[in-house]
Length: 544
Image (cartoon, rainbow, N blue to C red; front, side, top):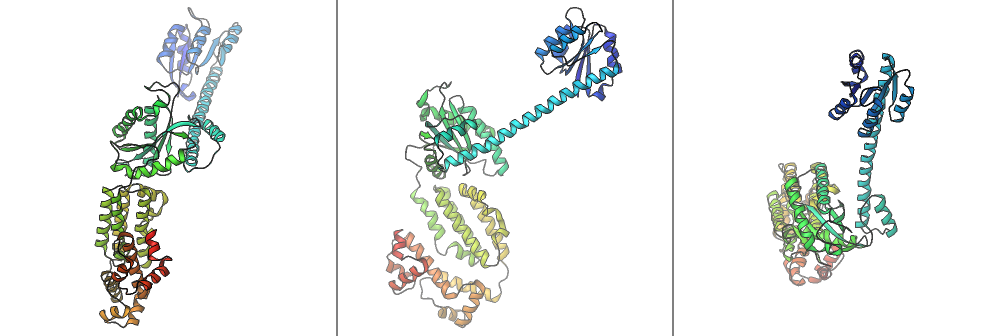
């Protein structure tokens, strides 16, 4: 709906028009009246007038002067002139000043309604064009976001793009960086307060964090900030030629100038978004030549920096990454300690498996673990779950398919707390699915597995095990193979060799000592068996 202002020093004209024209049918909400041009300007200032309809001859300021002034002050205003038969020259002048139509007095209602309709349609069409333009701008901005992210990912993974081509893309995508220029690269990890968000909320949070970064760093630096493929944000800063900060040129890349801005940035995120961010600041490098190498080095530091950063910020030196604590190996010692997680799950030792996982995650909580090691931990856990579900005729996707989706895997590797939560859920569902009364044969198989796992050093054979469970060796082997899909002899060898892997990796025991501990009398036979199973000798495995 629109508003109209009627202006004529003869008030009966405006009163008659207000009373007789079906304004609401024309899309008009309010009709205002004025008897002079001066008062009309006041009305225009006080109300959102869309259409001005004015007489030419009025005392003081004429209608032409009113149209001229109003069109300057309100460019979107539509003006219609009321004129007499002898005033066509005035009407011509009015059209030159921007009036869209003129109406001969005395006013004919049909002509008047037709003229107002044209004005309304003109405004509506302009509105549609403006909306279309805004939608195009929004679409362009959205497209630019995707194009910028794609370009960034190409640079981060080290794809070779010629400098001239990079320079052209930066210009086309309106990215304010210049090539072959010293640049500070900052990696931002969303931490406490952000981990529980779903994907859509996280994107909104990242957008808000990016806006804060541009506002805080924008006075001093040209900034390109975007998301990375590894659930981080990256900011690349180049000093402005004429910034309004306290530094100039390359000195803006020094920690003493960056530190207060970073602290302000982190404080703003905490205050407005109620979440913490950890920041890895890399030494200056040339953009885009060195970006890929710097990013890979910084990415690993993100996973190690929690215990090393002061107030949530780490400034890396050249050729330096955050270092992994030697004690972080304790996580693998817990994970691979016999009986391994897979064996505990096979025996339906739910409580023991839960204790093992809790122990391992407690170690990770205390000591920094690299991204590569977190990925190994994820694979070890998920492979144990996959093996057990397959052996029992289930599928892990039926329990919880999310843990196999790449973007979820990446998040769980990034946030150990999420991996812990996922493993607890799968373990609980496995227990619910598999904790049913075992038939006699399943009970015997479980008894055999317990015996093998607790007596790895004894000279267990199929016959000695069969004697203990009071069954014939052939019949025991048959029911074991039927229940597990694996022969009993092969199972005994596999468990012993997995124990051997652990001892070779986590102890300094001699080969002959390991041979004896596993119940083998001949080290050469043990080495031959080990190589047949793994493709390398025990010594070669240890040397790796």
